[in-house]
View 1: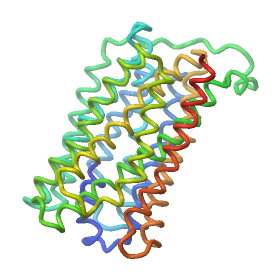
View 2: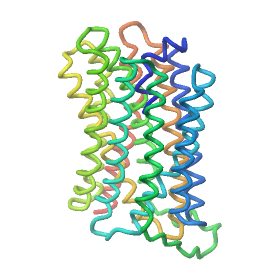
View 3: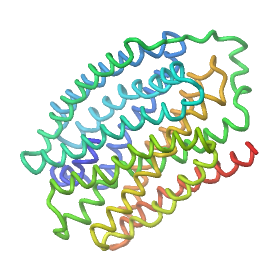
Length: 374
């Protein structure tokens, strides 16, 4: 989240167009998708714990490299991609470890806590980045968030030190792998693609949108903006990840997915046209947006672990990562293209409307999933 949090400053400092800014974010997401694929397949072979520990260490190293050397569009393209290439291994293996160490009745809630931890990290990243920009500069913002990533490596190692790392026995003909993906898992896969398109595009561009709307009007200072952006976009996501998991355990995953996807699509279609509304109203809409676009993530992940046989889970999650996160890698760049092509006064509206496409896809898949489960 450091790059999106600093984007309003980096656009000027690095003389980037909106399209170039979107491409940098897409480079991170593309690297993230590749690392998710590799990590998922390795988890089936050497165990999720080993992959998780190696990935948290490499994430810390690449974060420090980004802080030291990202000083232009070209260099950021390289080092942001390297960060993405290492961070994916901290996601899928974590979900697999939670699934292996949690009772079935609590699985969705447990996965929700993992994603809530991610949201807490996003809050810290955005707030510290905006604060350091106001007090010193974007370079200092890069360094302080990279340093906290080093702490993440330490805490990650301690967190899984006593976790059971069961390696499923792979049986059956690998050529029949596609046959294990029944109708339910296909809908979950398509829903995840739409979810990722909307989520990763919003995470890349909402901080810059709030900065453009609230700083230019003098509604708040840069430090206040950092705090409120973090609270609206990601603290709300923290609670969404926890609450959606409990709700899915109680009311069923399809019902929760339908509600979150519908509201998310509406927010994507509306928020870009709200740059002139009052600061409290805009932040409220951003908070609702942040709540719903992440809230279905833990539900989609836990539902997929139930829909796919254990011996294929790593590979299915890897395929899901390539298709879903790959879509999320494209959406920030598509947003930037729409932004640059839009007429004056409609730039943000056009940009966010491209994200609503993902929300609609997620909603349709969730509605069909609910029908299948009846």
